[in-house]
Length: 178
Image (cartoon, rainbow, N blue to C red; front, side, top):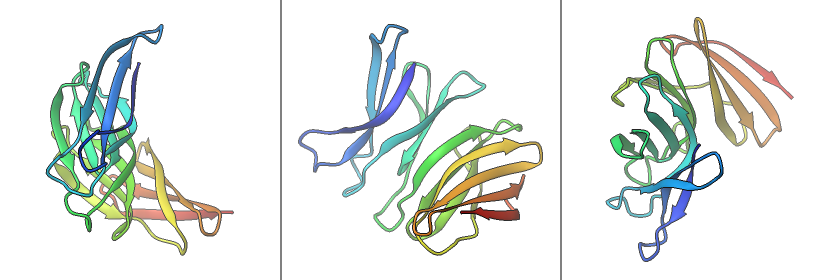
């Protein structure tokens, strides 16, 4: 099992780093690693979701970070949000039918976001989802045959919204539930 979260780096400005630990079936540690960007002051990285990719690696998303590692936690590539005005809180990732990745999250400045990247971490497209009033967070995404469906939670109005987009990220419909 590989588990992700965050770890406070002692002695370094009190910021969090993404933390990964692999344990065996008995819970014994096999390896652990901390991944962060020390060049970014006042930014924290944490792990929110991890998937095993079809190429046998791991894709982890979280606060201000998207990182692909091998099965031993060695970084293949990483993408960090840069600047306090450009923070992204990634919450979920799935591998798409065409071998890329769809990632859901939000940004205080840009709202609810779906991001599609290729297997090397290059952006294919990034789309803002229709917003409602209140505090909205895109929390999860699923892959369907003709696109993607994202769940948005509106904490202010205690409602839920489903947004469906096509394979190019164009919004097809939105349904709200209370």
